Amino acid sequence: MLLVALALAACGGSDDSGSNQAESYANAVCSDLSTWVTSVQGSVDSVKGATLATAKDEVDKAVKDVGDSTDKLANDLKAEGPPATDDGDKAKSQLDTLVTQLTEQIDTIKSALESNAGSLSQVATISTALATMEAAVKAAYDSLKELDPAGELQDAFKNSSDCKSLEDQVKELGSGS
Image (cartoon, rainbow, N blue to C red; front, side):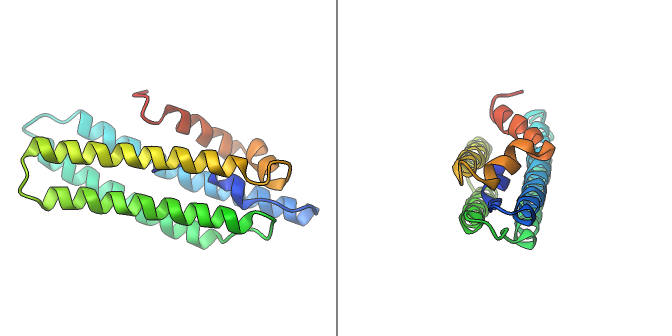
């Protein structure tokens, strides 16, 4: 669920201090999301490379890593707090929703691992949950880009190098790249 220009929504206002606050927030949120995406992609890649002999250990480690990364993302985003801009509260709300969606998918994955379902069923559930997480991040990113279309949020998003890097990552989510 990953992961994205959520920082856009967090920026907005009309004075220089609002602009600086928007840029700082955008940079922090995009950096947090980028770190999460990188971590999750690494975990997904390790599962894809697993063999039948190592799959359970690889999946267990990947699930733990994704869960830890999601917890860290949630804590980091909460610590940022919304900027005092026109759409700052909307950005916070979208980020809160994203964290909830990601956490729900982690719970789905954990439940699948604890079930007595066969390995193929567990892998299918985990794959679907990871794809759902990626879709949630993309959707959140798209929504945040639309906040305050003529204001500081959009400017902060467009000008932040962290957000540009995150945008590239979001484009690659689920593409197998």
